[in-house]
Length: 150
Ligand SMILES: [Zn+2]
Image (tube, rainbow, N blue to C red; front, side):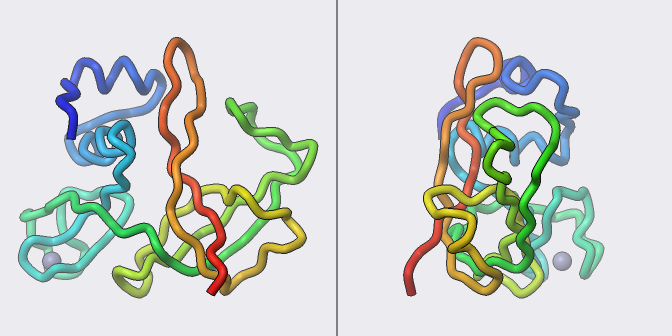
């Protein structure tokens, strides 16, 4: 983990509401690590970040790296959407909610790269990858998924 101060974190994510509960998540992205909250008492994973474990109400929350392997749970193709760096809607933009292997119900939503849309389907295995998307002065790592052939 590199040393990224709170001030640098805010500078890198203009327009994003960075707060105590999610700053570890965004700092992790800059380090190309997908962190999800895990309860230090009952080991339950959850996302998005929250100050209290939704299972046992503990405040002992530990942002923890996930392996990034999982299964496509939901899959949609956006024909239009908000302008985003590196995103074109000329070819419909795939958006997948992936159920991560760490725990049933632990899901993360992003795009899928490296596979033509018509070859994507719910139930396929994917793994986490990173692409750099430029907003402002410097590129930022963005977590994406890529198909793995099982
Ligand atoms: Zn808990």
